Image (tube, rainbow, N blue to C red; front, side):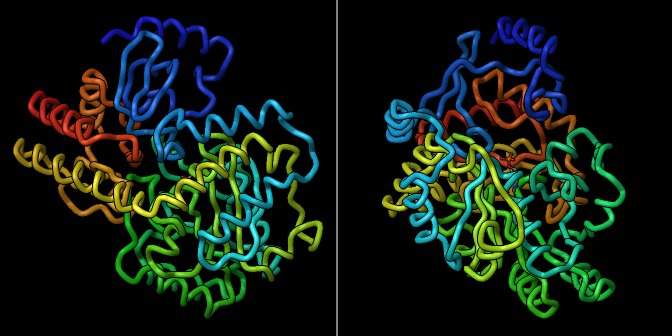
Length: 428
Ligand SMILES: *Cc1c(COP(=O)(O)O)cnc(C)c1O
């Protein structure tokens, strides 16, 4: 495969955009080489500017759970655009998508829409602090909650990929209010609560971590977090930007049967347009402006185009009762296939998977937190990534990313992928 035009476009982009990209992990810095410039996409496939075709396992980092250019979503956006793209006033569509989301997700009464997952998590934490009148938060090493200041501390994928866990520009004052815990380590969490009595506003977690590869919670871990938060008067915040509307209609709350106090959304909820949201029971949500004292706003929040895309997306996920089962089966099939071909080649690896989130770590010991995720062999990953790319299989250009399976993938695509992995493994 040739990447001639992509290389040229990357040179041009670098002159006017820092690193040539508007989000760092797109730059291929962790794997080397030139990022692909994508011209168009349809269903499970990406087409780059050089005319190469790829089976896509990034899917815009999650949103395209039904595949690219999914017709009902595209048509809804086109029809909506003809009637005006932004008014800065309430629209009926916002109430419709809010009601639908609330009907799908357990344990939430009200929801507010924003424009990204970052905004959702940032606002959720402000709300939690305002509601509890406390300042500190607990986050887990390797979890990513967007790029707002409080969270850029051991922040997983993007940040870890570059070995800059703490970004310059985040003040010490801000960083000191973020306490770090190890994923899947309940004793560690209990110690933090113990040594910061009545100071912790919230604990935020990816209920299935997806930004240090895919790391599921150990059995009982989320239940224990629920308990310890309740005992200490802290809010439990589930960052379901990745897991929401992906693992089940009601996300990880439904899958694990654990109720969070505040839930954050992004990615799938926007159907490929910029949408984030946060939701909670009424008592908490009424703390938001204009009803309550916690300020939060956005010129393009609840934007009609974005809401039209999100609404169509959620409607399909709500009405198709078999979709999450189908995604589970396709991803389990892929897992089994990868397992077989990598084992045949006697490679050191661990596969983690929950539903349609899956990741391959090049290390044979169990991967259950950030430390164990870092044991993966990055040199092997680089070769694996480029080998697959050459064969037309596009996975995320970082060993710390989860692969996102789309319902548009056919079993033929999956078989092709498994064969490609087999061929790459032989070359390794
Ligand atoms: C992607 C992601 C975010 C940030 O969302 P953006 O829309 O990129 O700002 C937050 N939390 C999690 C778990 C994510 O995966």
